[in-house]
Image 1 (cartoon, rainbow, N blue to C red):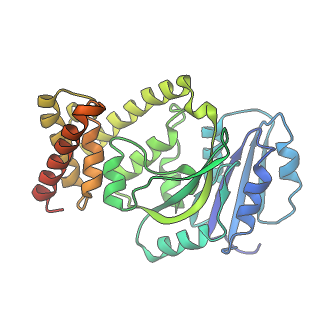
Image 2: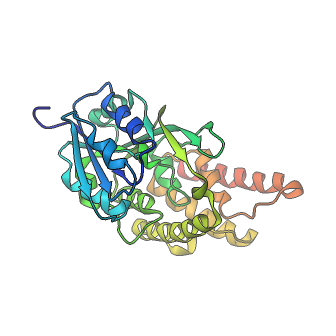
Image 3: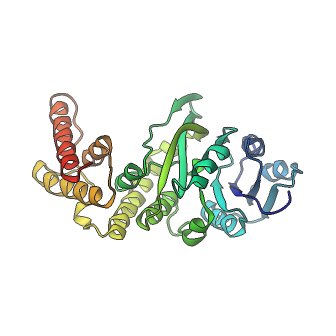
Length: 307
């Protein structure tokens, strides 16, 4: 490879011997070839390093650590080393579609956004079933929905390198580090897009849905959401949580109004999703009523904001 790459693909790896070759090949076989692939072996105890070292492609840059530092520090190390105008994130067990970088770089180079993700296929390792991800695609929806959940898949993201080098991952947040990164970027005014093309196959493991993991994730998610409202200048009284009918009409509606003022063009569906986080989830008799309440509030906010 001669000259500077247009995009640096960052791949942290830890005990990934089963899948990393497939992940590496999916990047080296991209239709866009002006890239560098930086791989950080984070002190693996299996044959991950052996697989990495088997590649002689000059675009592959190998960073080999004998100590395990964790994925957050590994990602930040790779961000520091990246030479490209853009940075693409990639996990060592996922698989990128051949046109992923080409399609994302086309959008980024056109100036339509600063950070570009995509829809993806989700492969359940427990059942080996392949499912479609559920996504929102526009900048207003993605940034508004960050108040209630992260609608961006880390491994699908390609964005301007200068933004990643400015923010990086917070080493104190270990289970929602990507969520917090997008929150900081969104609050700073950077624009997001999710492409509708499914440009990645993302592996999901049983450990990710375990009770222990979900409890840790729940706690850090609440902290990230609180920080997001703070960065946006929105009262923490509007923090999404289940509330009584009277409270949610005040606080849920208050959050929607504030978000729609911040991000013009939030969709009806996104407003419904946000307000739903203030409702108690019941089955049976109450379901039509809670759904009707959501629709009424989202409609009112749309009329109020001119969306």
